[in-house]
Length: 389
Image 1 (tube, one colour):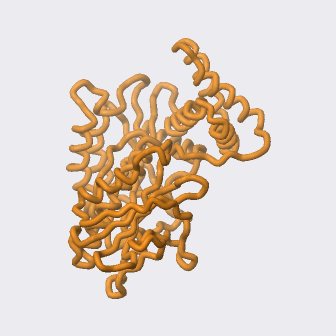
Image 2 (cartoon, helix red, strand yellow; image 1 turned 135 degrees about the vertical axis):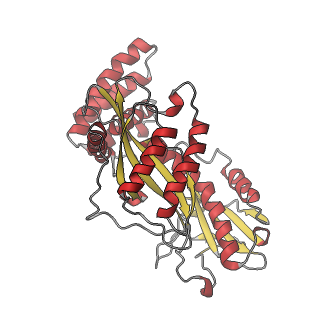
Image 3 (tube, helix red, strand yellow; image 1 turned 120 degrees about the vertical axis):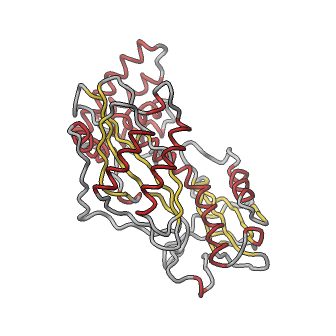
């Protein structure tokens, strides 16, 4: 998942310098023949570094390219992601890909991260292979529903996970996850869970249903939401679910990050309507930008007409190449209007990225132009996490 990087001072190692040179050469290439030259060498260098579990070298090269605003940054990031999720070297006669199937969920209660039974895995396998994957694919599904905190951390960890899952796919087995020592799951009203799997095909064959002539992404998503959703719903009681299209790991995670922003707003409006008997027309939403050196995110404070406090809040982070030149407030307002929110205000003032000193929750903009802690009425706080993700 690509994110803006912080430029670090000082030199970088020889291997990182090589990555910078190769990715810059690829970015400046003028033809496919030259592309092939750079890509072969860049791929080989990345595979060696991933095999050595050398995360620092990858990050050093990315930091150098990002800090110099080089076009090579996107090339290097794309290639590192591709090699991390493709289980390079596991089975030379096969193409292997780590995929993710994100599930957006909201609930007044706990959103589970849970192990999956053999029967659930069998059902999910049927629907993935029928609606999402191409024919003749081999599939291994991890038997756990991951929270964001529990996903592989970093490129090398992702590559290691993809390798283990890829071997399981080749042998026709699902992939067991040892949950001992797994990080605790933070609880939010709205969050994402991830079904992870590895897909293997003979070299050069199609991986996804939409690569076949009679398939499409739209059809795959519709069928997956219907059939896959029916399998997953019993695992997440009390949750409202929205499934994101399963695809390559990093791409799916970015799609989930993007989809989770409007989903969190819709969840917030639905939650406030149920918890406070406050239909959307009675709600007032206040949007404001929050910054460090540059705008990092927008926060939306929710209250009701006639109140000065903030009842609830949502964070809308900027992702990837998004910055203040994009009219994010208009996008947020469109979602709020679509939800039927009665009044929307935008504060044209940049607030610092402040959090509650006691609990760490974000501070949200109020109708009076101040930032404050979001607090539900006392009688409504039982069993409810503090804020939306």
